[in-house]
Structures are given as C-alpha cells and as structure tokens.
Image (tube, rainbow, N blue to C red):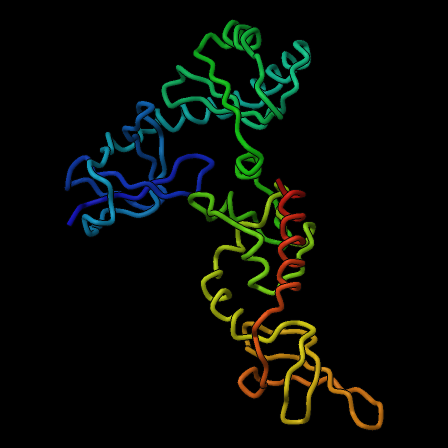
Length: 294
C-alpha cells in the first residue's frame, strides 16, 4: 500500500497524487501546499488528506509534497493573480500591433514568478518571436506562449453548458474523453450538431459518461419508425425511453383512427435487424455531422 495526498492545481479539476513529506504532517482539504513537479515547484490545493491506496492504482515513483504553503506563499500567489489582468491587456495590445491572427485566452505565473505563460488559440502556426521579445521586456521574466485547442479553450474559460450546469471539462473532468457520433446515436438523440455539441463546438463530453449502458440497451430497443407487434395489434415505433425501457407505439384501428400507447419493450415483438440501405444512410448522416464538428 502507498500513502498519498490528493491535490489540484489552479484551473484544473484533475486530482494528482503526491507522497507526503512525512507521516507527522496533517493535510486537510483546501490546505495550500508546495509540490515538486516536472516544471519545478508549484502551488496546489489539497483535495483529500493522507490515505493509503493499492500500489496498482498509482504510477511510481510519486513526486513529493515539499511543504505546506505559508502565509507568505499565499500572499505571493495572490499578488501574481492580481497582475494577470494587466498582463493580458498588454499582451492583447501587442498582438494587435503585430497583427497576429491569434486569440489570447488566459495567463498564469509560475509559483516562483520566474515564468509567465500565455495561452492562446489560432488556426495555424503563429510566428510570435517579436511578441515574446516585447513581453519579456515588459515583465522582466521568462515568457512562454502555449497554443491550445478549442476544447482546452472552453476548459480554461469555463461557461454554462446546454444542460444549465458548468461545463464538465472545467468543473469535474480530469482528462478529455474520446467522444463519437456513435455515442449520441446509442442514446437515441437527434443527430443535430446544435443539439449534441458543447460550447466548444465539439461533441459534448457527457455523451461518454453512460455510453456503456446505452450501447447495451440500444440493441434491445426497436428501431424508430419500425413495425412492432403489441398486445393490442401491430404498430409503428414513435419513440423509445431508453432509461425506462418503454416504447411509444402508434396503432392504427380498423375504423381508421390512430392511438398512441406506451409499452414495456419486453411486451413487444420485433426484429432488430437493420436493412443495409438504412445502415448506409445512417452512416452517411454520421459522416456529414462529423465533418461539421471537425
């Protein structure tokens, strides 16, 4: 068993494991700590205190927590935070002066203040050598410009997702999950780009959360628009509730009237086999949507 402390860095929701400096220190949630990383010493916030986990759950060797953050450390971090708006404003001005086709989305100082990182998005490669010189002369520290993707932009900036909650990528996700049109299809969602994409314009990350369940249930449900047998006669499938396993069916009566009724899927008779032409058509639709979201 290994002893670990869980911490998060600024603007991230992923929890990283570190080993405690010693067994006597007590680490409480929200405590500030200084940790050793591949980039040097960084400030982090404790998510959970000392606990033991199986060695299989971690990658050895764990980097150590150097020490608890002091009041001086916290004050210094706040001072750096207060400088960010001014740094962003100056950088924006210089980007316009150099007529660079890039969008600045954030900035942060390293713990020791020896490095200032600017994050930006751009369609292609940007020659920002002159910009770096201007920024270095202004801030008298090492400057790093880091290009990120459109999903990273949303993760950094945050926002309210279509569901009304904070974007998963900026609030609760550790890493980006692989998401595909197939996942939306498994859930019975309308394959409309505006309905299944997030603020970043890419497929919503949450499509992956319950995909295993939907992928299993999808094969058990009748096809929309397909014919099914019900206890009250044959009908046409109108919709499927994949959580309750209930299908809404339109039944045509002998007198010409139509009724809509819900049936548990286990009370229906149908063949799930899909026509080759229907499959080809669905594949074409999925390819078109993927092109739009690329």
